[in-house]
Length: 200
View 1: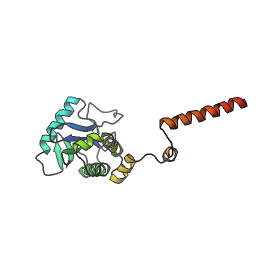
View 2: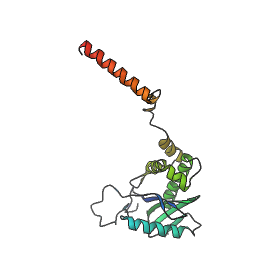
View 3: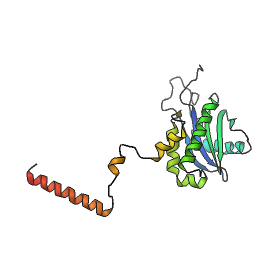
């Protein structure tokens, strides 16, 4: 077992535009609790790019490096980076230098496939910006604080796209129009009047 074994295996998930090198959605992760023997950013799962300037520099260099690559896994800035290209966007998962590439590759495949399910096979810059909430929730269901939670794209997409089951029956048949709300108000007013007349 490696001495730096940790659940915090993902440092960042990035969705960047290839045509103008802009950010679409980026999430950098750090463990919520820093180990006692940690010095600076020298512990498993630490965010190596704490400032926005460092993040943008890393992202620009990463886009330049991966634009010419034919493989899906590279070592960049002492980080293992797995990536996939979808139309005009690049999807990246960044981990530590000693991280398992296969595990990170499963994360990028789950992200790509879940986004394809949620966005109906139209993963491009415009669709991602229009459905930013779905993309952000998809990443949150996939990774939390750098810990991989789920890698099945069907389960991720189902958690993102449907409401919780316990709330669904209560919302059916509820009229939230102005007329419906007026009826609810009148009903409540009538019941309150009856209770007051009964002396309760």
